[in-house]
Amino acid sequence: MNNSDDLDHINALVERARRAQLAYEAQGTQEMFDIATQAVGWALMKPEQNAALAEIAVHETGLGNVADKIKKNHNKTLGLLRDLKDVKSFGHISDDLESGLSTYLRPKGVIAAIVPSTNPLATPVNNIINALKCGNAIIVAPSPKGARPLEILLDHIHENLRAVGVDTDLVQTVPIPPSKHKTNRLMELADLLVVTGSPSNVRAGYSSGTPALGVGQGNVVTIIDDTADVKDAASKIAASKTFDNATSCSSENSVIVLSSVYEDAVRALQNEGGLVLNRAESEHLINTHWVNGKISTALLAQDIDMILERLGLVERAQPNTRFLIVPTTEAGEGALISGEKMSRILSLYAVKSFEEAVSLAVKIQEYQGAGHSMGLHSKDDAKAHHLAMAARTCRVIVNQAHCFATGGFFDNGMPFSLSMGCGSWGGNSIDGNLNWEHFVNKVRIVRVIKENKPELEEIFTGFWEKAHR
Image (cartoon, rainbow, N blue to C red; front, side, top):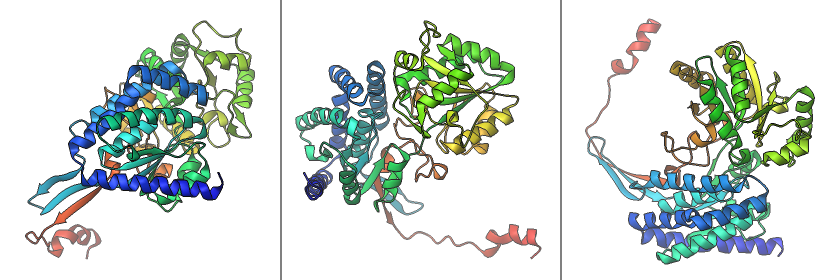
């Protein structure tokens, strides 16, 4: 198929989606939209399908591990459906007599979702559910490695949608093999883009001419202060660092520890399966994981056994080893070890004060990860408030396993999502977790009300007094 045929195929794909969306909206009810989201959720959450899809995803992408992907697919989808249950996302929402405003919610239209190979199942399902909940159609553009798992997933989704009388043209994918050429055409034709993945993908979305919701790079830094429960912190950091072989953008990459509890923290991390590397081993790791300044595939999202063998650390490892610790003082631009790793690798820093910890964390995330999120293990809530105002970060995750908590979990109040906006600091148009509210247009009826026009004194008195005018 040549480029012209590719474009014709994408044109036809979008046209089918647009026809389906118009009918879905015209005939739609909140009940229908909710049943459609349940149909999509069960396509992934049905246990035997979840297990088979997770296995295919790991086999095709070479990233993560099957057991954790099964948990991720289940929990993230269940949590999202919990968030959406009983939410009114279509039609007449409210009337405000005082303001004279009535609010309606309408679909965006045809959504294009660009999804990464790290989460080839959970991320598209999250996007599809949000889209259908609000009356949209959606076309997913996967990475080349994630195309086969998505194709099988869509077969299950279409089967479930047909069973409840919903048009399958509402949920489509770019034909295999996906390509930048096809994806670029899709981005031009869609009504809204949702882009999760590399910074280059996000930039392409923003420059496409179509309204875009992009998310930023992770590179999470977590601080352990001198009031923290160090054993609890180590347990949560280890669980987060190793989950799905660190494919999550919310997995800890660097840990900064106050010197007064540093030795305790190192022992606690070792007890949780951390192997502390010496200088030579650390240099070998850096030269293996990064090639010409970019992450290679050698250790990317791999099982610990493969990592240990690749780095020649099998004899050094302990029976409980499940991640590597690189003690360092290097941070920021030019210090690769302080960047995002997407592997079972953790850089570790010792500092004398909390102020120094904050300064170092900011330096690391200004290099990579600005706007995304930071972690804090502390019993002093004032330090979380300080971080919220001192760091350029949109989330401060306190005393939690970061990769579970950032995208929402059953024991915190964040919306369930696999796409975290990073605000202006991360070059994004949103600063919260991507959720259903980003998939609707708000329509307002505006009526005449009693005039509310202030006198000049009500507005300018403070200035006049300060300026002696």
